[in-house]
Length: 202
Length: 79
Image (cartoon, rainbow over all chains, first blue to last red; front, top):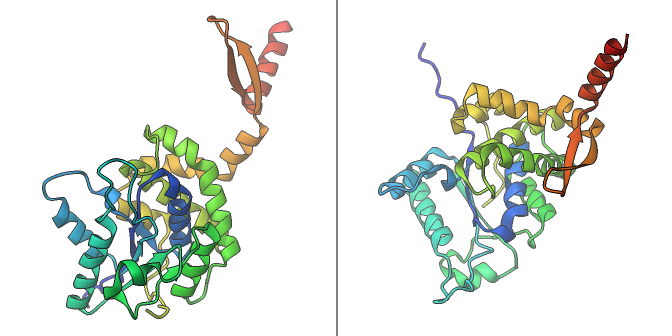
């Protein structure tokens, strides 16, 4: 008998990589890990000429994807421009999932009706509103994913988040990174979050 | 989009490491960071400030286990 292909467990995180977003970044990793799913991000992809191909492959590898558009806003540096990476990757994901007719994608926002204003093409899609809070992210993740058997609670996710934040300094020191937005630091944080999920969600 | 019930198996920390391309040696090291023994060791550690050669105060973390080991050695030396 042919060996059955293992169902995908990966979740594509399309989120901003900036200092102000660090808490929510760890919250997403902790929350996704609590559901025993594996977070993936474009951070893993090295800068190269074929970056777009690799992003497309990553999107294809992930069954679920989460797109946080809360930081799509004008930056301070002149010329002031909004960051289009996240809406662009959202577009790629929607196109990919529509063509393949499988997989789910979710849009997260910090404020109600902001997405309807900035991206009216997605009208009819309910954005998940986290209010820019860690607890808000956990609450919305609980609304999205339902796990048979071991459904993690918001409190368990918060515990994983706290433990990962506590270990963050050691992880960054070992990976020689100043921020968690580096490939190695991201991988290490995901592994540590997975380990805490193993211990906390039982 | 409605809620989904992922039918995939629960990813263990080993699965996560394999998918993300983390080596086994690194995984071992990371498990030690997240493990309860590391946490307990950190909690037992005491922080002391020592004067360094440039006149500044330097933070020195002393792990309880090492402190006890050292104390034992001193006793033996005294005998």
